[in-house]
Amino acid sequence: MVDCVEETQKITFTPTVQHCSMATVIGLCLRVKLKHHFPPHYKVDIKVSPGSHADEGSVNKQLNDKERIAAALENPNLRQLVDECLSSDEVISFN
Image 1 (cartoon, rainbow, N blue to C red):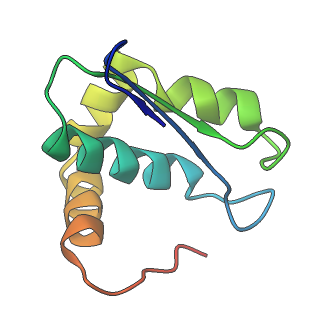
Image 2 (cartoon, one colour; image 1 turned 60 degrees about the vertical axis):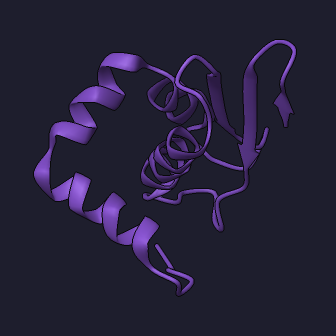
């Protein structure tokens, strides 16, 4: 959901399995994609759907922590994975 008045983006996604090890990577890909398509002052809130992940609280915390996001994007291997995910026209399966 995008709220142009409040200048926020709220995204909720459902991982394919309860123990999806790639949930944070998926969320990071979503965040980077949104960053490229909206003004930088928009606030982004990304979460897994309630009850859809075994470690929901931890995943949601990681997806919305600015320092963790910055550190993740500085990791060359993780950055390459995100870039490949966003540049592909194919559907990529993380599981």
